[in-house]
Length: 431
Image 1 (cartoon, rainbow, N blue to C red):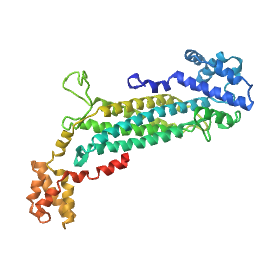
Image 2 (image 1 turned 90 degrees about the vertical axis):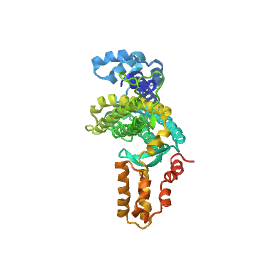
Image 3 (image 1 turned 180 degrees about the vertical axis):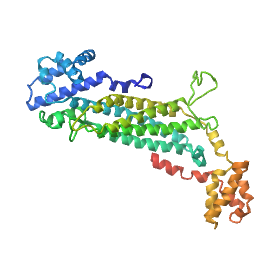
Image 4 (image 1 turned 45 degrees about the vertical axis):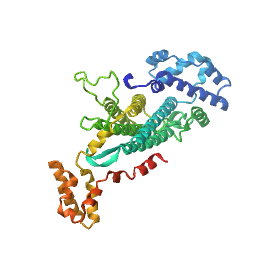
């Protein structure tokens, strides 16, 4: 994580203070549960909550000797708690603290990311409704295909990010588990009721069975969902980058007063935000692969996953949070040029109606193969000689055997391609 691509609220979840705060809560709630079970003296938990503190610098200092972060933390807390600290961590193992804490942090991060997605969805809906009837050209392989509307384009992204919202909500639920099961996960030295108590206090569910660590398939799914969200963001960013190209200019990132596009060329207005989002999406996707590789740990536990998660936990969440906020701001201020959309739509002299022509010929007795030949030979004149498609078709005797000139002209009506826009919008946005 670098500060340039980080926002304070998400960063705070992953700082040392929040991590140790969660560690302390896990230990203190465990004391409460054990006290209720009568395995530690009454009043222990009250003392832990009242006197328990930690000092990050001191923990770092102790860890230089212990080479063990959880022991360093417990040693430091004990300095404040005093004699009752001997009941901290009773029957627990480091993973009980580390894994439960990590899942709390991922859950907290998911809450922010879900809020981010909600804001993006609201903006996409607003801009889609605004541009619902802005005629534009749909492209396949980057080449003009058939007419659509800019609103329909944005509706596809709204639907996709709605699915992503549901995926992340499910991933949050899946990752929100707690394991306080002791060495190799058998509860030999700690009552399962302690785990149930701590889980409830932290808003988690109980891990069905842990092997000293919480199974990493949960984490693999979580980071994979983040990667899918990032890929959806890149798809939208790439679309905007294309639309801002000088030769296209159907949409453009807002260029603020005083903004500079190039150190060398004062005229430049570059799609820097969408390009940045593309780059950040690559990074978020990159974190999914090591999460997948973390699933296969040795036997009941090893720590090959630990160093990986110290990187990807904060970096993936912080990066995606920043990128989502940037994408939302970009789409909110995106400048649209409906006149240019229409201009580009008409650029190929009516070729975008070739399929309508093909279908009309087949419906009037011409074989599909022959109809394709008739339409294509006139279409190539438009490509190669700059002719007008309708005019060329009106001069083609073979076409006129099947269709009158009036029938031909009727095939070139734009509203034919937009007649189901309302249906699409009802499907995506409801009534």
